[in-house]
Image 1: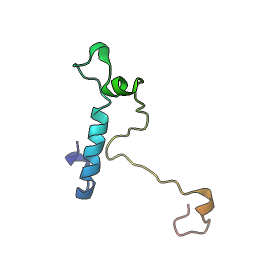
Image 2: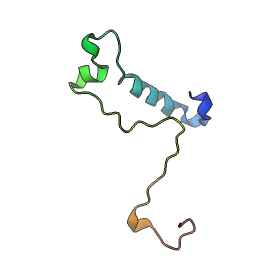
Image 3: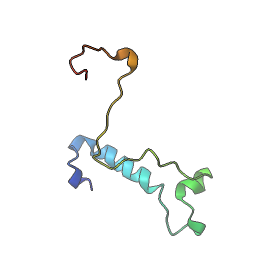
Image 4: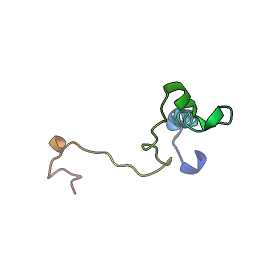
Length: 75
């Protein structure tokens, strides 16, 4: 997954932290009744709506007060 996405070398530590973050939020067989590790610890199911595919396109938001209509990159 990491090699196929052409991630730059300096981003690998962050990718590993993300992988651990995801691993802690997936079901495992060791716990009864299909409880997730996160759910066992916190008592509620994890939120995963913010997860995106590695290498997906993202856009940064420029605050309205920082936008300039005649800026070089204005659309």
